[in-house]
Image 1: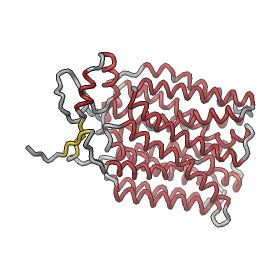
Image 2: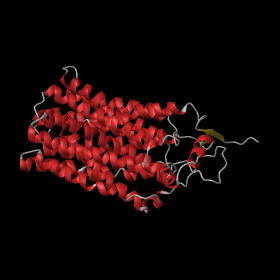
Image 3: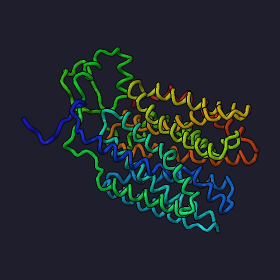
Image 4: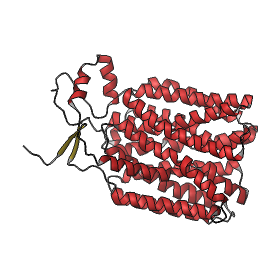
Length: 441
């Protein structure tokens, strides 16, 4: 008997879903350039003489409003179409970068307003929307899809940040035309995404395969418990038939998610972990120079940090899909702690190699958190309110964004990078016990 729904098994899912993932990833590749602040701040510092702590405030604002924009996008997800959200994000991003390109140095407040608040909000709305659309087509591969999307977002600094840095030095462009050009390109890409992206309709219902259901029955009780906790859409039991069942798990509302202790424990964990990466990203260029790198090498290392950011996102997604939430969290915690330790040792010994290792680990750690957060939320709370749930979880960046500012003042008052990185080591250690406190709702 035919129905109006198209039931897709993991073996016969709509092949065109990869096109939606590819376009979402392409959009994230461009909007992620907002994290190239360590490169973008250089011409502004040279042109207007603004000091490092003042410029660090702008980075904190851009991250904070990226999170706020994501929250707004999540709340509007059910009221406005994907197209409307992306077009609004394109407008904000273009205005923010365009106004930044017209700064005259009379007041840094205008930089905060244009780049930090307006552009940050636009990027946040587009980030949340593109992530929600891309993941909505892959309920059976939540770790992989999240990893690919986050990887492209993280790679932006390496691929496009270096291009922007080169354009700053070109007489035909300079920093003003470069900022305008970046805003225009982001707007064009988001308009293209707005024209073609959409979420699966009600006629597309994903389902598990018989093999996966059968495999679930052979697990031991303890192993099965872990897998159920980490699987968003697979729910097999001894009473199920071996035939494929529609992918199903209770979809928690945003209000129910907010009442879950596991959500808030993970929120604290994510806030502590991502704040370490934020500080390293903010310090990356100047830290490299302090350890003896040339200007060209330091700029390249900022790109390497971005590449590791992208690598962490895909590695974390694969690790989550092949193991479980707790194992993935422990991996990220160890990498974060290793980053702070490596950089502290580099500062004590003057070793550029240890500094590069620490920055790479920080990139992997920072990149892992969004992927882990995305997979965790889908796995524990379902896909229906994912956009809203993720936007709230992403507010970790709003809190964490204050840490680079604090670290900047610690650096200025102490005159050494050792003090802020001792703070980061303490933050990393505090996050360790949180790995063992999360339980499925």
